[in-house]
Amino acid sequence: MQFGIFSVGDVTTDPTNGHTPTEHERIEAMTAVALKAEEVGLDVFATGEHHNPPFVPSSPTTHLGYLAAKTERITLSTSTTLITTNDPVKIAEDYAFLQHLSGGRMDLMMGRGNTGPVYPWFGKDIRQGIPMAVENYHLLRRLWREKVVDWEGQFRTPLRGFTSTPAPLDGVAPFVWHGSIRSPEIAEQAAFYGDGFFHNHIFWNKEHTAQMVALYRRRFEHYGHGSADQAIVGLGGQIYMAETEAEAKRRFRPYFDNAPVYGHGPSLEFFTRDTPLTVGTPEQVIERTLGFADYVGDYQRQLFLVDHAGLPLDQVLEQIEILGTEVVPVLRREFDARRPAHVPSDPPTHTSLVAAGPDSPHRAVVPPTAAAVTEAAAQAAEAAESADDTEKETVA
Image 1 (cartoon, one colour):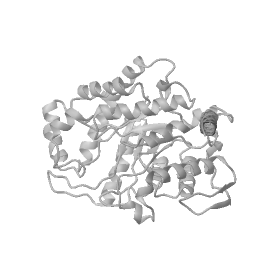
Image 2 (cartoon, helix red, strand yellow; image 1 turned 120 degrees about the horizontal axis):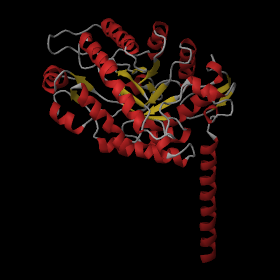
Image 3 (cartoon, helix red, strand yellow; image 1 turned 120 degrees about the vertical axis):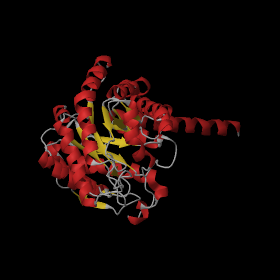
Image 4 (spheres, helix red, strand yellow; image 1 turned 45 degrees about the horizontal axis):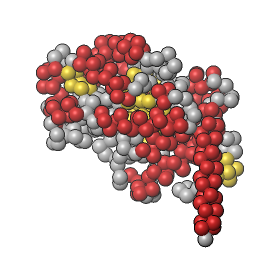
């Protein structure tokens, strides 16, 4: 199972001393977080994508390309790549280039973002967010899997005889996650293509998370990619640790109370009771995180948010050290012990996708099983409509 860190890259004033980091300091801190994650043996570092204050990660591939040169083992990913406001042609080029720079040590997560004003800044209509996500991603798959693309759709200018460069490393497109908190259409999209589904799992109660993951699992099986429990699932999580629960809450409370997203709202006690936020000892984080699988099933990737809300870098690095030395080794052992043999432990990697060979479903624009299910459904609908017309004619 993979464990890692994801960052949203917020620039937030430290409420305990009034210091606001510069954008440069925040970028340097995110880099230090990624390097620390590799140092302590974590598997993944993921960055968000934002184009508005108070966030700095507007160019994820620039940062991840730099990190590829500074690291040797860790998988580099995104916690959001905006499939709506970004041109899918540019996504295809940028992330294939990153794939080459990193030697395949990357994947990415598609998302629509959570900042409404971004849409008009990029000439897009937020009311078309879901249709854009569907159309743009299908084009992206073609760009990564077909040498020459002729294409015409609703949301960008047509392509005629277009070849995306560079082509994916070894002819194998990066593995894609689809991230969504509340949109069943995105869970459906992930299931249709046999891609991964990532639920942020920070602000919502466990019942909501369980419902979204269950939908994805059912549809993954429906499209013939495997049994529901073999679907590729990732979760977010949010933690703060100290030697005692009281000390963890004392230290974290000022940051929680002033956080840009949930500050000045429900109490820390409410959030730790009703959401996955865990503020306590390493043992409490272990127990709470192991419990996630009780309601989403066995899953493949767990990412933690630790560097937000103005937390100073020294505390963030301390949290990552505890994760790598005290928490994750136990989680690996316990999750692996409970996982059935037929359920994958890790999500697909570049190495595993190359090994699957040229006939792998991953290399098809639309996986054969999904195409067959879709065609059968269309034929059934056509037959039902024909029968209905016949019945109407008979009655008439």
